[in-house]
Length: 125
Length: 125
DNA sequence: CAGCGGCCTGCCCATCAGGCTAGTTCCCGA
DNA sequence: TCGGGAACTAGCCTGATGGGCAGGCCGCTG
Image (cartoon, rainbow over the protein chains, first blue to last red):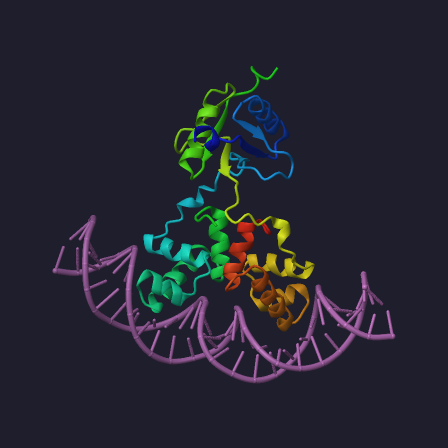
């Protein structure tokens, strides 16, 4: 079980900075138990840059708990009716929250709102 | 050559699978030149899961050039009217392409389509 | 207590979205 | 030369969407 459960972990390095990528490749190249992915190879995990955009601290967009609930459902393509049903509220209330979301996310519509939220890291697609 | 000039690379492990995350932590913990990030710490790079849940490679979805045009505009929250105007086509044609997109992306609506496309890496939000 | 913000509901209404069928060109490959 | 796919246009129609307005309930705080 132990050996079968521990295949070599394939790591893809997806970092724009050549210097950093190279350094990581060197460091990880000698680690047994994992290996670097060939270009285009399906990797188990990926190494991505994290300090570049430095995560728009805008993540502090203050959404109420309910708004976050609505937002994730919206991101799944749920209609107001579906949101209402899944949250146990009325369609009117769902629309209320959606409207509030559009306002806070500075979006023109629900599609735009989801895109903005994803860009800001408020939600994970 | 790199030891003096290269600060330790801080790696954040952002993987849902506890077993995999733990294994990676063990493997990377002993690598000199990098160290794991403390929870909430700003890391240089992040390790994220890559084994696609549905393993749909980007190339699997063949969108026509026009459909890609429409898709990116949709991702920006553009309405059919806006898409039509920016692409110099009629609203009917815009809707035609959107419908085709919904079909190919297996989405129920434009919001869902954008979310799917983003998830699949067809577009970058 | 009074005020406030979050949450919920209702109704009206203009617009948009998406599904339908049906037609046109252009261009590529059999 | 013909078939077929891509791109484009069009009409019609139902349901969804989003904005505006007004109200009620609850918990917290000045």
